[in-house]
Every structure is written in structure tokens, then in C-alpha cells.
Length: 490
Image (tube, rainbow, N blue to C red):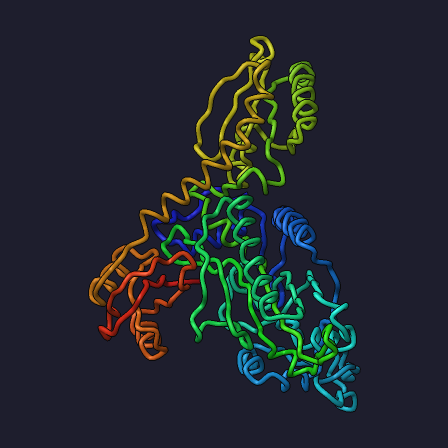
């Protein structure tokens, strides 16, 4: 296992890629732009998935599954939707291969599909075609469905977890009788995402609206959560879309209301993806490797035995097994690494690289003294603690480390959020410091586009908690009643 990572200060992008590979999270596959998520990485994703799934079900949603393939004609029904995704679609044109006569295979030209199929980039079209059959009356509403799936968006420049041609995600799709209910659902789900990311990932986020040019294709309003990475770039960590009646009209999804009148339903969609893994890595990790919040760590504690003989190993193992049993009884996920193929120092480096929150080491002297060595991954500190205190100490540390990681990230964000008044000041801060920048904007797409083209910074969101304050756009001088959030982003 490679141990020496490129330092973040030297090359942040290279550090990230090396960390993902060396910590056994994921690797590039034989398919260009696609990744293999390795067992350790997938176990973290499973923890995320489990918590989100619980939160979805607690808010009344059910899981379903819809086809991977979507008829091309479906995409023609909602004009802005097809415009938004057309350049990213993978298309299936044939359904059979045949022998080329030289030991290989070729596409059979006689097996051309009557209608091409799109490999789903998102499922609105296939789902709304289905909902037309499911919804007739107000009694069928609200319809609250979520899907865990993979999607394909053909990408030219890819990076593990952050941007791959195929990725895993969940997508919620709901139908409602009123506009008010649909907007409440959209807001509820962006709050669910924010709660999950802050509480479980220990990543602070800013909730806000996207500008018109940054909205999801086919949405009337897009809510988002934005997080700040250690290199000063933003990462969109989740989105929730109010779709109005656009998809209902495109797919003719009507319902009969209590008064007997027919109307189109109101819709939402919302999703997060394996991109959250990138957010987790880039928010907390350091030059030594991954740093995981205890709530999402596959192993919250690892116990490493130190011994020179079989007799010492038996002594140490007795204590280690007792400690493991007691910790597991407290709900702590523990691994006792008694492999004899690697020395303790190698194991220490491995678990530091893999971000395990707490490491316990025990040797013959510890058995004699009734002690263990405890190392914290978040602070890289070590201490000797008594055997009698280890369980209570570790249990307390789970909450302490979780809070410490959140507070550290929140302080970093505060230190790297700057308010500016002029465009010159904006560019100076962007180039010298980066981070989030709050500035007045005149609300026009022309000004937004100018900033993007000249600086590569985008409006990440109009914060939901932005205070009303009269001001002037930093470029045009036109009036503005609140500051918006800018940053360069992934």
C-alpha cells in the first residue's frame, strides 16, 4: 500500500486522486470515464445510503425501480429537459452482435432498433409516463416515490466520485394535488439533505436557490446545498427541484379533484449522488490520508496487537477480544486486526490512511499495566488510558470527533467567506484566497455570464437566509436587495 501522498498544498487535485486510490475507495475501470467502487469505498456509500433511506421513509416516501432504458421520443416531450441533457446522452441503437469471421464480434446491422433507447441520465421522462397510469384521482395523491439507481451522463473530463460517466444516486419523484404541497415537498427534501450532510458527514452547507441559468432542465425552481472544499472551491452536494406542472403537461398526467374538476398534478424531483463521497473526502482529509466522521466510518475503532511471541499474542488477544466485545455492545463498529502478515507500524499507517477514527494498540506491557494506547485520527494525538476507562472514553470520543470535524469545517468556511463591494475586489479575492464570496448582483443572466466567462466563478446560490439589504451590483451598479454566493466550483 502506497503511503506517501502528494501534499495538498503542492497539488490538490493529485492529492485527491492518490488518496481515493491508495485508501482503497475506488479506481478507474476498463471503461473510459467509469469507476470501480471498491469494497471499502462502497461500505461508506452504504452507510450514507442507509441513513438517507431511513430519512426518506420517515418523511413518507417509498422506493421503486424504473427502467434503465428510456425511449428517445420521451425526451422530445419536455423541450427544456431535452436541451439540458442532449449532449450527455448515451444512445443504444442495436440489440445484437455477430461473429465477424475473424474471431471477434461486430454490431449486427440487421438488428437496428426501431426507436433508439437512451441510457437514463435522469428518470423524469420514464417516470412521468408511468405516473399517467398510476394517477387518476386526488385519492392517488400525493405520490411519493424514490429510486436508488445508476445513471449515465457522458463526460469528457472525469474524476473519481466527483464526475464520472456513470454514477450511483437516488432520485425522488413526487406528484401533488396543489402547487403549495409541491413547494413544501421541495423545501422539505432540501432540508433533509442539509440535515444528513451536516449531521452524518459533518460537512456544513449553505441552502439556497439556483439562478435561472443554473436550474435543473425543466424545473421552475431549484433548491441546493453548497459546501466549501479545502482548496477553496464549492461543491454542490444536493438539489431539490420544483417542477411545476411541466412534466405533468408533457406526459398528460391529470387527476380528478374533490370538486370533480380535472387538473394537471404538481411535481418535484430531488437527488444526491456518489459525488457526496468526494465532498466527504475533500472536506476532512489531510496529507496523511482519509479522515472519516465516526457516523459513516465502516470501522469506528481498530485494535492492533503488539507482540513478539505466540504467548504474548494470546495474552494481548484476550484483552483485545474483551474490549472489542464490550465496544460492540455499545454499538461501536470495531475491527481487531490480528493478521500476522504485517507489522504493527504498517497497520498504523494503513488505518491512518483509511481514516479510521480511533486506533487502540495493546502490547504485553499494556497487559501488565492495565492500559491501552489510544490514537485519534482527527487530531493525530495519542494517549495511554487505563483498561477500565477505555469503553467510556471511546464511546464519548465518537460524538467528540464528529463534532470536532464539523466545527473545524465550519470554521474553515467562515474564514474563507468574504463579502466584497467591487468587481476588482471580487477578482482579487478570487485569485488570492478563493472560497465563498458574497456580492451584490443585478439579477440579469448577462451579468452572471460575464462573471463566469471572465473569472470562471459562478453564482452557487441565492442563500435562503440572505438578509435583505439595499446595494448595487458590483459590475453594473444596478440596484440589488441581497448578496448572492459566488465561488469557483467542481
